[in-house]
Image (cartoon, rainbow, N blue to C red; front, side, top):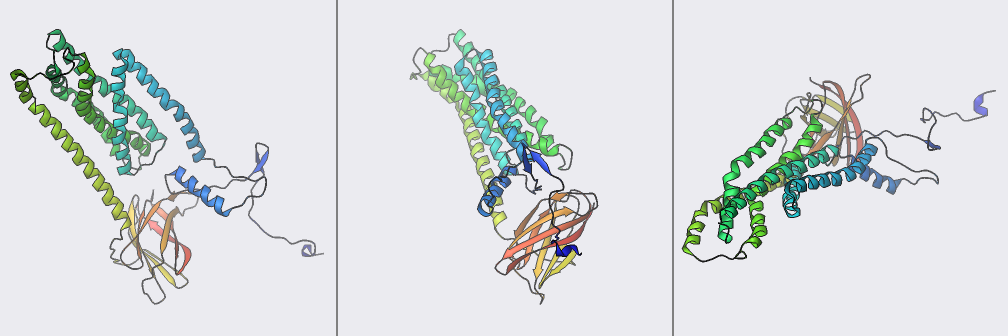
Length: 415
């Protein structure tokens, strides 16, 4: 008796084995993303799933893998970061024996975060565990440079007071000038020693083992130390004058006398230095903002593209012909993808997405990509990052008013 008279047999892909967790059946769906922003991908995927998928009663979804490790690391950091700041506060207090001095030193922490986040933004780095480790190390560096600056200001103040020269606000200005301006060299040596020790990490090859992690640790430290040094040179002396002028016999009042006029004229170089540093800070901020705005505008404005030579790969899907022009090699590469119709005319297909996947037995490797539409009709500029030479597959998908589709095109990547 044929079995077809008794049952309908169909082949379907299912779980290779029955697995349970917490006393419940579980099935795993493996996702390999091409972006480094895991949190952003999971948030977008959760939103999409909530909109389009309705789970039966008793079913639910839970994210694991790298996302789960990231969540656990964030929970540990939520305890570690406040504990680290508390340790820094206690150590500074043990060194200065003053709560006011401790808070003045810690003022460099929020100011240094400005430079840290600016450099992270300019380099396109997302928040990660490595970045948080760099921010924790930055807090220790801020305390170090702040303590050095406060030490020089206290030494100059005590020197003037013991000599009986701390009688009015002008004497305080002179003490701060001696403690701040004439100590620029040791402070800058401290900052430069930190920068010169970290900058070589930023020139490490992207494919070198551990380079991607070390760069994200060093980036906030480099950006934060620069703005922290500006704070030490500009803001600390002002805060110190406001704090110390209450201890003056005259209550911080300026006395009109010829001697004061002479001292104020002598202080002109100090004012010139402050003016120069302020102008340099404003210019650097405008330059960084202009550079970021230019990158933002360039990424959104179509660029011109000239297709030359023979394509390295071609594939026809329906009435569309997809051709890839350029050179693919190990590392960052840029190619042009052209869409033409059955008559050989350029075809605008709308939104295009790409991906790169290793096409060798026993190898599973994906690479991210970036697609930008050019001003040339039907031509798209694609930036790929093959991690090694060999046979790869370019995955293309498009969606627009004329329809949607996808194709896989084998390509060869040079070593």
